Length: 486
Image (cartoon, rainbow, N blue to C red; front, side):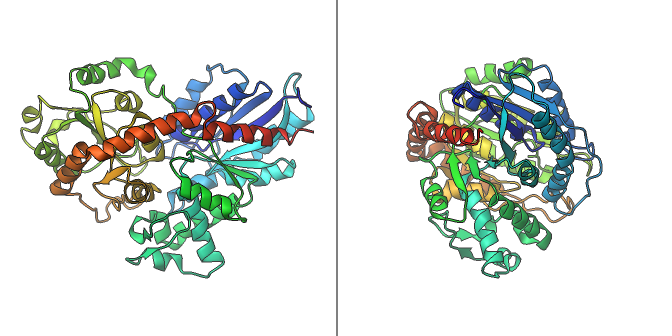
């Protein structure tokens, strides 16, 4: 058994960021153990999904990618997904419609093993793919959930389910109240205003509850975080007997992201090369981060009044309801205050898509105005760049609260900003020039925060190095996988 190969079935959610994170942990595992092999099953979202083109393009790029002991299988596209008022519910319905294809592939692997291939010992599924646990159970194979967010949000989801299922609490009413509640995975009381938008409606809550219940059915949960960052949250999860074993294995990052777009990167990196060290504030709001003209003018005015050098990734909102992905402007100057680009030409650069990892790793960058997606926050920690929070959707408000209030590793521009992707005509919150100016000044002028970020950077690098906490956790995880060998 010691020399037998153990095969893992990985199923990422159909988002580029989630697929990238899945591939990074897959590479990490096979590099640590020569007797592991991994098959990644890729879900192609239907064209009606706003981000489908980016995902399909990325999946196609993997077809020619050769990785030692990692193979990819494209699942047939399923076009029968129901459309829900809750976008994430639509996504999970799409994923669950692929169970039949996964079942067929795994049955074939088990009945007709390929010479040299390993025994299927586990499913490793994305946090949005927990419906696949039922398929794994049919083959008597355990499931591990890869939770691509943080330990605090994992604990929050499970606690919301406890409040609803075990304590009969009206979570929707609670979420819409202006109050704070104690949550076991947080030291500080959590304000309801930073609850994810899904908590505010019954349909959204049902999605969270279903997801949390399935998480408890997993054998273990792999979390992209590290002990030194989320000590309290991880300890809280480990003490709760009804929660599966948690393996903190992060930070897991794709540090080559965007490396293939060198031609469009050159101008940005060349500009940064001419700026003083730690002098530039970098504004980037993720693949779905775009704003209307009113908000853009507030951002421009706030930047100009702050007086700090800046690099601003300015993206155009979706042109219609069929997509949530943003794109580049042909001429952003038409939307910005008159003369802004000319007045700030010496200290600022407004651009479209940017290679975020390369920018955060550049010595000229001293601050990051972020949408608080977990991958982005981990990248900022890895490079020791302090963040100012401007969350937009999903669990990002809770991430912002954790970084600003719980951990003291960021400053606030806003923590409770939310964008309604379902009803684009709904009333919009506007972040003011004064809030933006103040946040940028605090971000760029707080030298105690800069010192803390340098310390957490060193801890994040040490965590994944040999002898580090996440390195040890990955070792225990691999042993756990191989215990399932016959």
